[in-house]
Length: 421
Ligand SMILES: O=C(O)C1=C[C@@H](OP(=O)(O)O)[C@@H](O)[C@H](O)C1
Ligand SMILES: C=C(OP(=O)(O)O)C(=O)O
Image (cartoon, rainbow, N blue to C red; front, side, top):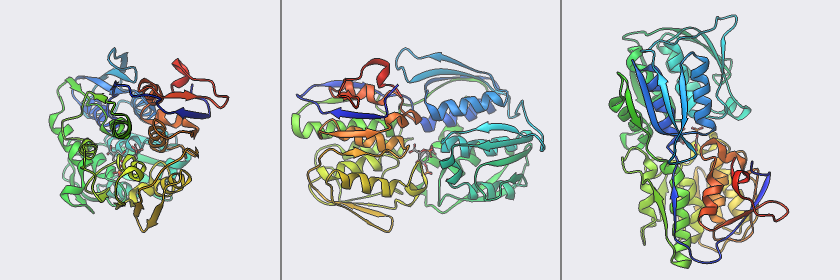
């Protein structure tokens, strides 16, 4: 287990290395919902095994779906998951007086993808998560499910919420806004085929909805009658190693190879790799149209760019694992960067960084962004780095494979299980 404070000691000399990526969180949690709804047994290969996906598996098990978990020899943070689909029915349910309890931790995908699926059941289900998940938006999803004719009890349109399932409502229609999160639309689309729902997505142009396109593609390609589905490696997780390669290459001429390379085009963060090729850095990136979660990786790399960089449309980042815009500005500034916040835009200026004690705000991506900088910037210390368990439990073990050393508060180097979240 990772201790509550670690320091990353940068690489001393150039070293070529290969990093194996775990599976995509977004694809794994979509595939788990679809597998449960499928009409046969579905084997998910290369599925991510992290807090977010374990939360989803535990919810499915409580709902009565059998999920067999076996190790994946290719990657310790992956599993092969064999799910017994029930053809659109939900085996277990509670009553209005005693709903079946489901706990989603801080997994946005579980908190959003499960409610429409629970509407397909017959009975009552209470969804809750950690306190931050109870602050994160759910209103547009709750509103859409009510339009479809389902009863959802929540005093403030957030979690905890009780969903009362009454089975498919063929022909029912709803419109859902993706303003606060695109996961609302994905959630409805995953269960909408079985529910018989007509779904209209509002609040985003076609080129602004890569995660909704991902959902549509999975629904289309999924083995609904049973079979095998391979989960692609995580492009958002890859960004930290593509970024480390860019940082180190500028100084050392060393090379990090990241495998397997996500190439399906399903993950918007696949595009992050293009930024990392020589002279490709642009003066401006939008969270809506350019990058997804990897925009955070780009923000912390921006002090190393040749010119100031603007990061726009960051509004949604304020309601995710933490208030990410403020977190990134605060922690980057601590490291000596010049960062300006104006509306939902951050402007980051070129400059030299130094190490600092970084708050991670229980946000895996804050921990991974500054962990990545630690391969080059001396003195980078991270408070509570274990939050990487949300999507990348062996992230720091992989960082040591690049040649970085991770030390505890007493300066002792960590190895083996001590590097795992
Ligand atoms: O659909 C998904 O799998 C995701 C959608 C994005 O969230 P928003 O749509 O809330 O921006 C992203 O940040 C999250 O990590 C995963
Ligand atoms: C926003 C994220 O997660 P989620 O919304 O799935 O909890 C993320 O992984 O950066």
